[in-house]
Length: 355
Image (spheres, rainbow, N blue to C red):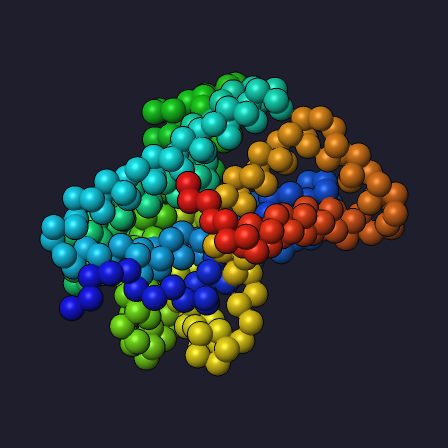
């Protein structure tokens, strides 16, 4: 029985890298007033291509655990060290997210500090799911996934309303964390955070689905991986009438829909990259994913605070006066291109920064 980490698959690194690149594109338009519709989140209910990016990343966090954590956990004596490693890495990511928000609050003169965020959610999911999979066999992982989805669905369906700011996730975040949430309306005393506490139940389910999919991939069960992907997506669509897709609430149907698509994409990438030898496009981003995301986020704050971002946008807008949305997209693509050079340089020198 092997107790070492599973083989590193180029397809997983490639998918992770493409996901990070997509994050940078949608998070850094030249101007938020000029963005193509598919590059925006749904205002509330619904699911645009942009709404798939973050769940894909969390799904891949789970897939990576299936290759890095689960095989080592087969040896009981190794589990305490594994748990410490999982929690320490999650703590570093959490600290990075907190410091990033502190920098933005300070340099951009924001009205309040935000506690939750993308890195904070990654840290939470990495910690809780990571500890679970150290001890839980696949059958228990499935039970945990079903329980998360069922309990969260019951909470949402029992609510009086799922309208913005009045939904149970927003009310809980407001009660516990106001005004340190993403949206805060002091006049009404209401707020909302798309990466808040209650909606993290859905995010945890997404990460756990990634672990399960990664386990199937690691064991070579491609037919089962296809079945899980198709079943998840179909169940998500079937349940959307009762509980709509909603990224801000990370609804169970949204988990199933995005997770099903991510599972199918993982299978396709594995066949094309790992088995047929197609180029692992995006791999350079993927092997330094958190580092690139964090570095790009810090730089975007600095560029915004100094006015350099506004000047870059104005130059591109002047070059394309009749196509502002295209100009905005080109600024974002230029930003991603600059970070691809950084990722290429790091990979070329075999520098892999693990936060």
